[in-house]
Image 1 (spheres, rainbow, N blue to C red):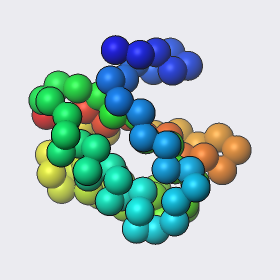
Image 2: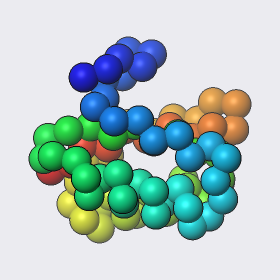
Image 3: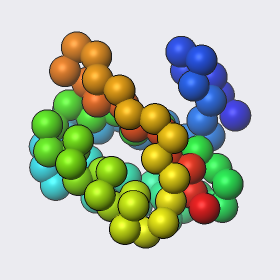
Image 4: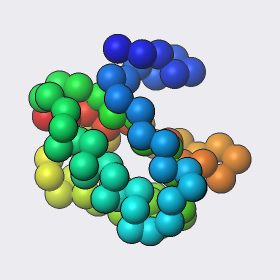
Length: 81
């Protein structure tokens, strides 16, 4: 597990250059390849990600452990359940 500014995660997804719907699609793909209990750190700059990613995580029953915004970059920590 890697530490990113005191956040621990197993996989990082840098979607900062992607526009809707790519951050969500890449998040789905990354989670599909991960094992139960692992953590995914997603970084995105598309404002739609603030709605799309939390909605998807809730829909599939995973855990959204944290959400933050800094310098127009949205960071999500997701645990695959």
